[in-house]
Figure 1 (spheres, helix red, strand yellow):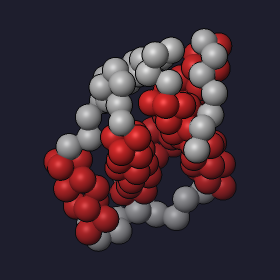
Figure 2 (figure 1 turned 30 degrees about the vertical axis):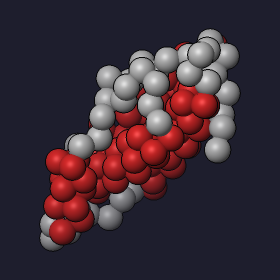
Figure 3 (figure 1 turned 60 degrees about the vertical axis):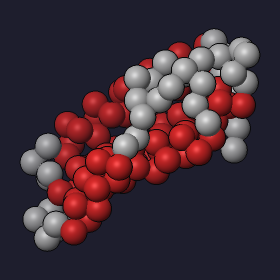
Figure 4 (figure 1 turned 135 degrees about the vertical axis):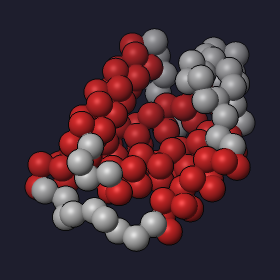
Length: 120
């Protein structure tokens, strides 16, 4: 579950002086792909939360049957952490984005295969 420590880390990342270089066109495309996978996963996780009798959440950072508040907090904080890390760690940016997109596509596909829809 997202804790206060996660929120503090997000705020600390935002307060850091920008050491980051400009994002390349390729990094921007990977960042857009990550955003798409995160939006889909967010919607799928909200669907799971609305259908606790049919599905359980497999993400270890959330409970089996998270509340809508937990889901929204998880994705807001998670997105801030992911994009903050990518921005402030430019030497790892490309790798981080590609790994997170691969994980996201896998999660999105698995959820779709078991009948999880998108709900906002």
